[in-house]
Structure formats: C-alpha cells, structure tokens
Length: 178
Image 1 (cartoon, rainbow, N blue to C red):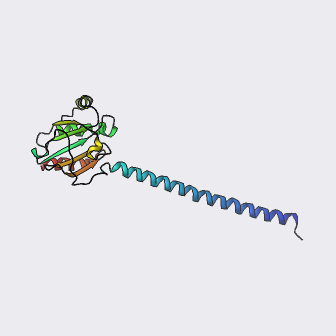
Image 2 (image 1 turned 60 degrees about the vertical axis):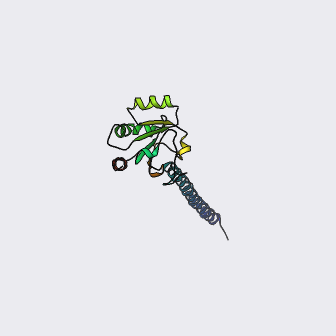
Image 3 (image 1 turned 180 degrees about the vertical axis):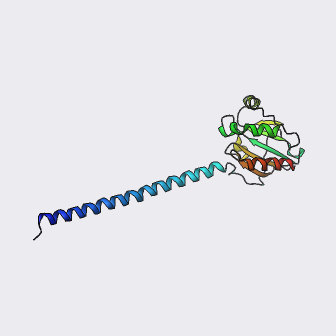
C-alpha cells in the first residue's frame, strides 16, 4: 500500500528532477543566446574593421583634381570630422603631413570643403590636397581609412581604423620608401 509519505517522496523527486531540468535548459539557452550575440558582435567588428571591403588591393580609384602619375605613390587619408577615431588619430595625421620627406598626402572627407578645411586647421593637419568626396565613391566604408595609391591610381596598401604604433610605423615606412 502506498502511503502519504511515499507519495510525497515521489512528488519531491519529480519536482527536484523538473527543477534541475529547468536549470539545465536555462543554462543551455543562455549560452546559446550569449554565443549568438558574441558572434554578431564579432561579425560587426570584422565588418567595421574592414571598411575597405568593397574594394581590394589593386583597385583603381579616382579623386577629382588628383593626378596620381605626378608621384610614385600618394597616401589618401579618408577621415570625417564626426569620427572620434579620426579626431583621436589627428596628432598622427598632423605629424605625417608636416614631414616634407614623405610621399604626398591627400585628405578625402565627406564634409564640404570649407568644413573640412576648418577641421584640418583645428587639428594642425596640412595635407597637399583636400578633396570633398562621398567616401563610398572610393570604396571606403569606415573612417579613418588610409590608402597607399600608386602612380597608376591603384591601391597598394590599406589601413583601417585607429592605428596601433606598429601600424603607424608601417605607414611612415611605406611613405618613406616612395
């Protein structure tokens, strides 16, 4: 005969099992949600970090008023006055634009020329040329983006985002060799 205490024990065992199963299901779902969000963040980061994704090295670009053949290489610095990475990087841009022994530097900005000039003046950036352009026209989807362009107008190197010290050194070495 099943007594009240036996029924209570069975009910307690079933309840404990259901509670443990709920915990396992919640943990598995939590991990799945975390993994999907983490993966989305990584994909988003990769997309932002590859702002040159529509073009590849070797792509020919055109900027109004720029004659690529006048120099062995030219550095195009695509920045925006509303980009906090561009503002944070402005001391480096100022440094390279003040170095007369480096290849010419062209600043490409989406802002109107007057607004771009004001931004550059405020940050002591003195490039050879400033071009107001829709950055997607030169296959740039993120700022800052630096493009080393050959005398034929083809992109030979690209750096995207706020540069590390080693990347800054690489940019200067690339400009010094031209």
